[in-house]
Image (cartoon, rainbow, N blue to C red; front, side):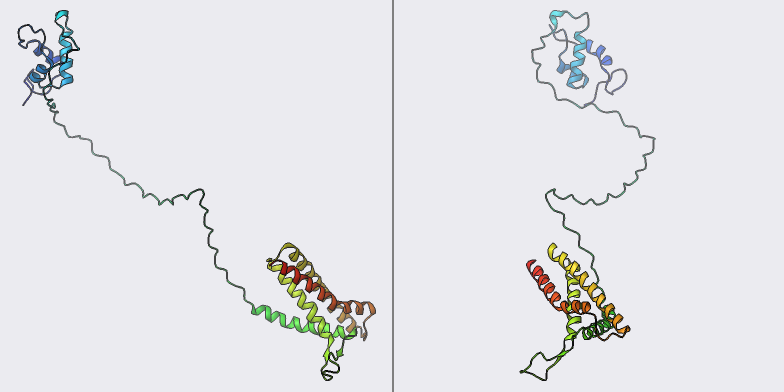
Length: 266
């Protein structure tokens, strides 16, 4: 089905062009205006356009008011709407813009839940320090410290004793070796406990000050021996003898106290 030819064209006409043709339609007896359905059939237009055309016919001043149909009266079933043919589309002379591809979107790490703790980053592997240079440095220091303490012990009354009389009369020992073993061993142990940092504050504090004190006493002992030896003294003064004689007892007490504090940490 094609649209009627009006004004020399078959394309859809505006309302103003259809209005004269609508006035010229033959109406049945007693009818003043054509119905909306007839307008749709005659001009092949849709329901909204037919209703608008009918409203213009009724709005003309020549139409009697009595012949205007009641708007509340429903019209008969409308004829099926025929879509109006669209005019042929002309090609757009404007060239299509060049589409630049978008940059790839970087992968976004999904945010974690607020109540989920973030796992700690793994620490980088730490290479252990080489030990053999320390041993090489300690050997000459050990020889000097050992000879100094043994020599000072001889000047202050330490010497060869028989610790097992009546049991092993032939067994003897030089008591001067108790000085380097006691003082320097305790100093090294207290220094290790202090620098390890794996003990409570009381043990850490005691290890720190006793280690520093032990190293200071060891240095003073070396100084005293070399001064006495350089002066040709064969017997140390009484105050040096008194201080050296108290060292084994002091080392025993400090070692027991530090061991107790360290044990309390576990």
